[in-house]
Length: 175
Image (cartoon, one colour):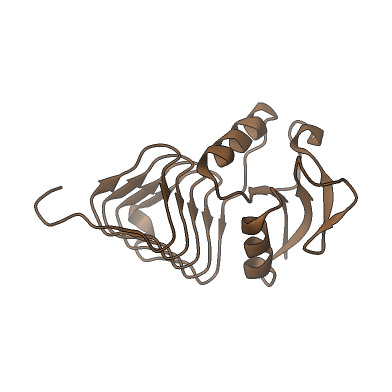
């Protein structure tokens, strides 16, 4: 079983721990606000981001849902020459992988899906049941919360957020 550690100890971290417990071994949490040596959802807190050494060897996954905070963490890790892990749940679906590009550090939660001709920038998050249909481009650090969907022909900015169950649909002929 692959070992990873999470950066961030909040609600999304709890969801990741719950959803991926059968798929990866989560050996630790790095969080600036949790006491070292404590546990978070039964996972040991190892320290703050500042405690990470350059080139840290254990794969790290950003476990924060706020796109701006995700970007800040991503940038701090880059300064330490650490590239966040890309993680795709076994129930997530990419229907036409030849036409889909995933940037570094993306997270696809259970039952999220991508149909075809989609591009995700670095550090994007598709939460549970989030979906992207054809011809969508998400900027770096974009987040689709649970149940959010984009139907087609949409390009987002960096740090874009589509909240729970929100839908963007582009009418035929307008894209």
